[in-house]
Amino acid sequence: QVQLEESGGGLVQPGGSLRLSCAASGSIFSINVMGWYRQAPGKERELVTTITKGGSTNYLDSVKGRFTISRDNAKNTVYLQMNSLKPEDTAVYYCNADVYYTFSMHLEVWGQGTLVTVSS
Image 1: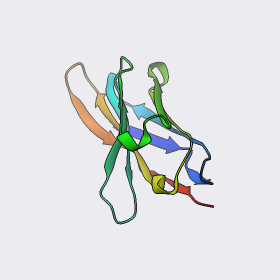
Image 2: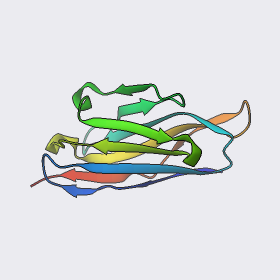
Image 3: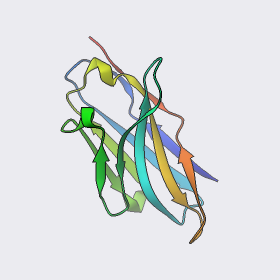
Image 4: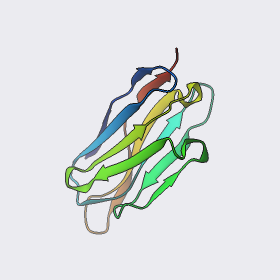
């Protein structure tokens, strides 16, 4: 069993910052890609950003220059630093990881989600 535990969500004013964390635990051989998705009310879940084990990143256009993803491979943890937050960033943010539990066997794991609300 592998679990992802997220933390760091909350209420922030427009222009503010938040840092999300997501720690993986359980039977982990290695973790390939880790990422963050979000789902706003009434909208479909969308990919926000990903990071490979080697550190290569990708971002949704609307968050480029404001959000930064990073990871600590030793701690099996991924972070999302969110700056200059806008009301349209309000959503439930989900952590996602491609976890190898043996050398060749892997599965996609999701966190439970953490709510980020940007409002004055």
